[in-house]
Image (cartoon, rainbow, N blue to C red):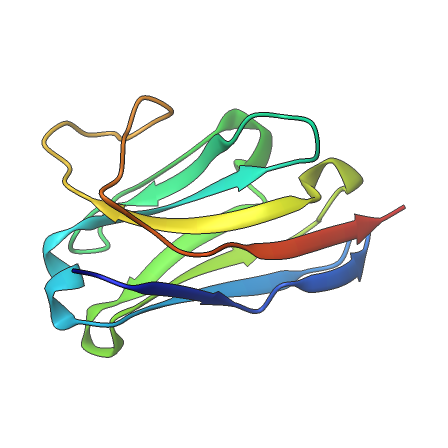
Length: 125
């Protein structure tokens, strides 16, 4: 069983930056691809980004490309999401996830095995 805990969310003005962290409870997380999803009020949860087991490859939805950057530190069992140039439409609850990655790149069709509890990110205009 892998437990994931997000941190680093909060309120930021448009154009600002935040860095989310996702800490895993076990080293076994290094065997999994990791990713970020988000859910805005009244909308379905959507895929945002994924990073492969080594951290050498990433994939993003088009709306965050060039603004968000995913990374991981397997020695610390932690994944990060650096979010720059934030927009009000980035406001959502952000979830980290872990799962197998037979196919790459991972995208909205990916169904992770494990989820964090979610953390709020609010971008004011």
